[in-house]
Image (cartoon, rainbow, N blue to C red; front, side, top):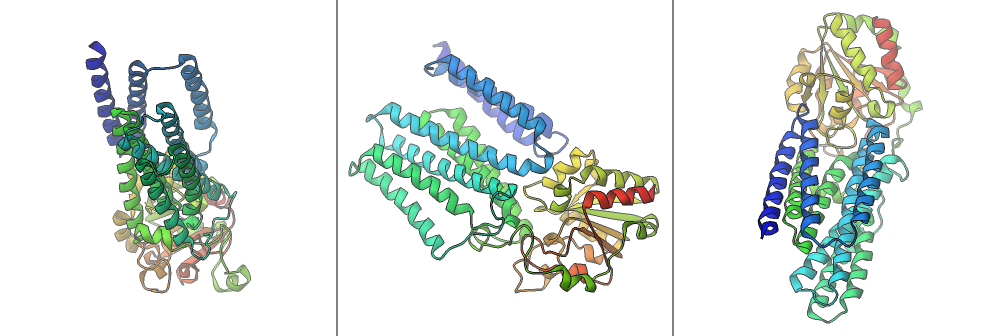
Length: 460
């Protein structure tokens, strides 16, 4: 009697804490507290489940907690902030894989005594979990450079993906009707879902990784929620639904940031290799103005306001600490420094915000696209550090460009634009950036961290 009253109350407390934690994660200042709140909610949910469910061996549970906790602690301390997108992708994959394994285990535990609804939930959990697992592994591999960042396509790709999805639905229906053996159907669904996850992500280019990571995050939540129906666990249903819904909302925000639909992201294969497309340095070096860092100091010192626009190049060079130092040096000279953040800059949602927060850049100096764009016309210097597609003026008018219609940061309207890049290669979208050839643009070639370091030294 006590258990039947006490456990639902604990699940309710857990659900409330999950919602509160998600709310706190919506702002950088309260995000650390949100993480702790959500962690407490998960602890309560796990303990409650262990109290109400039959556990074969608490020794195995405790061992799993210890091993998993150790791996998580080591990863949290050792993984560089620049590699955070890969870590998030891996977390999504592990979540999907866990749902697949739990649903499969529950199927074999129940044996032949499986209601139709429960089997439908098992099939859904396996299907979504499998897609999430292998899809996240592909995203991780592309971000880590283990696979080409360019889209991988073949003739009839979407037809194959559609056929696999339809096959899973048909197999589940046949199993429920008794036309096929359920154990065989489960094995086939596992194989097809893992294959579809791979085929689903390989045609997506590196420039669209923020959207993919958000979508896979949503998938991991949906897989967890479906597993909650399999296990009849209200806490898992609620927490999974929260993750699924928040992932979909974030995916929508990312798509709006590029002025594209989710279908366009998933099915048009936009992007090129990590090292750029067809533009060569020999073709372009003579057409742009290139300065050395020491030649630009006077311009920086005489500016009233400077807007720094970070991109993936800053993350690769691990230049965030030096960028923060540059901001402090400029402010000491009476220059107002702001940071313009595009919603899809980097390789995951909020990537630039996370890096700059790590470097202790004040939150009130970070401005999103809509807030910072009106200020570029009144700004003496826009400093672009490793950003490319998100500052390409062609997005405004070139209807043939894959970037057309994407909201961009209006850096070209500044009095002087400095662009820090290693070379003239285009960004992940494979589009030449006409900003580099503008009369008010000056290129600073080289490693972003070294270049900013030279700027700081000269300014000091």
